[in-house]
Amino acid sequence: MNDIQQWLDNPGHDYSAGVTLFARYSKNRALVRYFQSGTARFRMGKLVYEMGKLANTASSTKRIVETQNFASLQPRHSEHPRATVSPATAKTQLPPYILAAKKEISSLYALIDKRHRELYDLGTSNADDVVRKRKRILDGRRPAIDRADRLYRLKEAWIKLEDGPARERVASDIREMLAAPWKEQPTMAEASASPQMQGKQLRDAVGSLSDLDLTNRRSALRSSITKAQNMLQYQTIRKGDSPTPMPPGQKRDEYERKLAALKAELTAVCDELERRKPA
Image 1 (cartoon, helix red, strand yellow):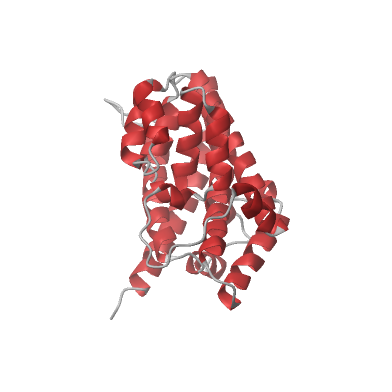
Image 2 (image 1 turned 90 degrees about the vertical axis):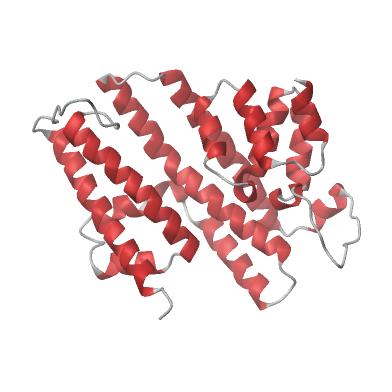
């Protein structure tokens, strides 16, 4: 695996080339799809770590991930180069909440990686018990991915900002997020299915998202709606050759409620995107 080591040794780390190499050597197809569906901005650090595991250089890779923010793994062009600071000194200069954020991001990635391995071990069977186990894993993994991505973006924003009100607002968001028990926070689709989050509350929650988050959420919702419709009509997440509707019962009721919640959220997201279009 000399090509993996060469990629790791290159300070310019090309994300696309790294994903191609990872797909060539890794047996974890779920993790391959995770990298293929992401970008260097959010998943470079994780990719470097996993490539290091493939090349049996996890210790050196761990050092790269801990001492550099993920965006710095891509070449930078700056008119004002910063003074070189040793990793040990840089770490001691970080405030406790940034160190705590880095630690939690690492633990969240470890949990996500564990879920990827569980999905891979399940195989591709569509037997009822396997489908149920796969759904539990996916539902359990989603909050961890959402939290890791948001916490990472906040941490990166804090690192890039200079001291001032903007940086303090980001710091406040990080501290608030670290204090929140993420396991108890439902996803928006789950929350929108409850009587407590209907109408105006759903629109307010959607309105708090950024333009990029709204666009990504719209794509994710459309995909989830298609899968839910396929489950109801074909009992698989992919469209079958001929319809085999899910029989009446608790499982069908759950999918119909889920589909209604997803459609309601998609409508709210599309309405918000339309509202934000320049006149």
